[in-house]
Image (cartoon, rainbow over all chains, first blue to last red; front, side, top):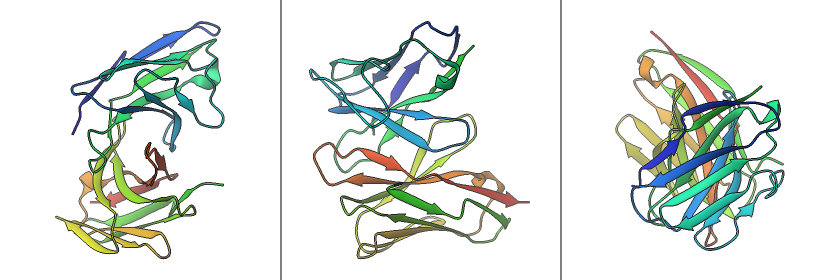
Length: 114
Length: 112
């Protein structure tokens, strides 16, 4: 299975500012997924990012608010633009090596917007 | 509508007891299932996957899938306090992207 490393682990930012979250895989993966999780709740899929193409966003998430880059097969970044207190949550990246392997998750980035 | 439904919302079992969790997909495009466990402060970790009808056993964990009804269950025998966590059922679609969609989760508490 693939290992995913996220940074930062946690961050506090002011309302109206932007924050960038990085996800690095220890092997090449085709798709990377980004999830949002509010405290003790479900994981909501935000978008799917494939190398060299625009990310595909799920309902309720937009490119303007959460731009995602995927410059190569081991790296992705999620940006939270114009952060609001309602964006305070944990953000996870996820991927898998093959279509038969488990999806693994990074350790998450806890964001607090004040 | 939530594509993946889980029940119960929370569950308490005594140490050594059996915990049973349920999950149903409402979308026939999502018929590959995983069970994930998340301890507080950590990311979710895959417990097991099940893609075919019938039972799949891994140690104390047994999953059962009925593809006709898209119902999957997870049974944990000899439950331990360390099994106390948030359990998610997740389903992936059959297309090329195969994105993974999560249910709302079941909170399991194992009482020592």
